[in-house]
Structures are given as C-alpha cells and as structure tokens.
Length: 276
Image 1 (tube, rainbow, N blue to C red):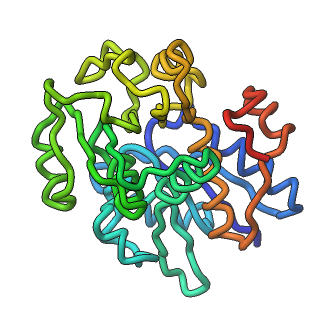
Image 2 (image 1 turned 180 degrees about the vertical axis):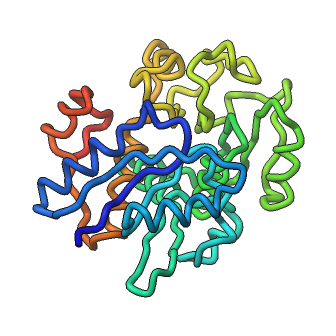
Image 3 (image 1 turned 90 degrees about the vertical axis):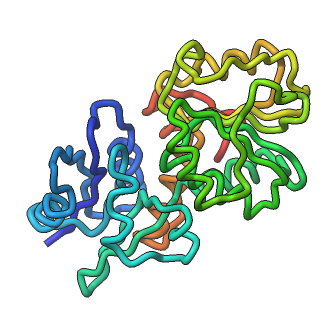
C-alpha cells in the first residue's frame, strides 16, 4: 500500500507545500500523495500518533504552532537540534521510528549560499523569537556571525532564547543600524506597522541583506522597502522552496529541481535570485 506524506499544523489554508511536493511526486514518478492534515488538539502528540496511523504516513512536515511541540517525541537527526529546539520535518523509517530534522536551518543556509552572502564577522537583527528564529540563529552561529540582536514583543521569549543562545543580544533603540548586515523577519507578520520595532532603512548599508520568511504575499512590505532602498533581499518563497527541497531529499534521497513550471504553478514567475 502506498504511503502518504503531509503537512501538519493549524491553520493550513495558506500552505503551498502540497502543491510543491505533489508536483515533485509527479516529476519523479513517485506513487505518493502529499496531504494537508490540520491538527487541533490539547494533546498534540496523541493526536499526531493517531494521524500517522490513520493516514499511513511515511513522513511529514510540521508547521505552526507545533514546530517546538514534538522535539522530545522524536529521534533527533543531529545534536544541534537540541539547541534549536524545533523540528519541521519527520521521516518515519522501516521500524516506525520518528526521525526529526530542521530543514528551515538547511534552507536558510542554502539561501545565503546561493546569494553568495557571507555573514562571518558581521551583525544581524532578527525580528521574532519562535521556532524559525531559533533555526536561523543556529545557522548564523555556525556561519560564524559576530553579533545577533533580537527584537520581539515578548521579552520572556527573548530571555528563553538567551538561555540557549547566550550570544544573542536584546535589540535596543540606540543600536546603530549601519553595523547591521542582515535584517531578518522570522515572524508571520506582513505589515511593518505590526513589527515590535521601527526600522529606518536609510540607515542600513547598501551591502546589507533583507530576509523575510513570509511568503504570502510574495512581496511583503519588508521586501518592498528593500526594493525601494535598492537593498539585497531574499523572499520567503525562497526559504519555502529550499526547505521543501531538503525535506524531499530526506525522504527520498532525491534533491528536487525548482523548475519554471513549478514557479508558474505557485504563481511566482521568478525567484530572486532565481533557483533552477
């Protein structure tokens, strides 16, 4: 019997993951289906196990609000996941063991590599303190960044981050943005007015990079500002596609191609920079 793959979380109305993975299943002649499986439960791990069994899952992606919920219920693929404290991809092996990965981490690294953006010795400002932010922080530290500043409405969440990542600093109003090489929105916020801080884009260096994890709308207000000030930028759709590539490779040992046909299907006719 053919296995299914899925994205698990809530809400899932916006997700493009089924479109992307089902396209790749067809492209590589794989007899699988990728499903949307909303999970609403006060006992998420119990519900997750029922979902795995009832849908014959061979693997799945995890999105909000559960990226940090199952970290203690899977076998972690790498030791760094203990620090990240979040997983977004699970492979179910032949012994029914759940193997956890974080492809946000891998996708973010891939995005910077394709952009040829070297963060070594530089400083970053991250908006947000959730599961995606934790993956990005670990990636930046592995890339030998010098300083990381966090802006978040909940100072408690920042304090929790600092317990795991003592290198992280709390953003303060007096911070000179000229020293910031990388500005990252690691939240689901799409409107600059909703950010916990005001960013004066004119203070940023022309060599700085703007990175938004949000992919709907494709061109967020943050990316619009990057375009307005002629700054380098990476859109959220690029992270979505990169992390999806790594999930697919984990499940099938195939690193799938991002084709023009796929970009057309998701309504994004070019990716900046274009990945093929």
